[in-house]
Amino acid sequence: MAALAWLLIPLVAAVGAGLWGSWANRTRKIRSDGPELDGYARFREAMERPRTGA
Image (cartoon, rainbow, N blue to C red; front, top):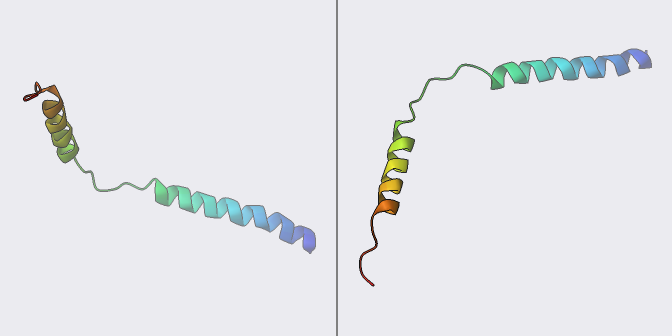
C-alpha cells in the first residue's frame, strides 16, 4: 500500500501541473498595444528634442 501512495504522488502532481498549465495558457481578452506604444512614442519624441538652455 505504501508503494501505491508513492506512485500516486507523482500522478497527482502531474495532473495538477497539467491543470495549472492549461489555466495559465487560457485565451484571454485580446488587448491592443495602443497605450504602451503611444507612451513609447512620446518618450522617443522627448528624448529626440534638442536641449534648450544652458
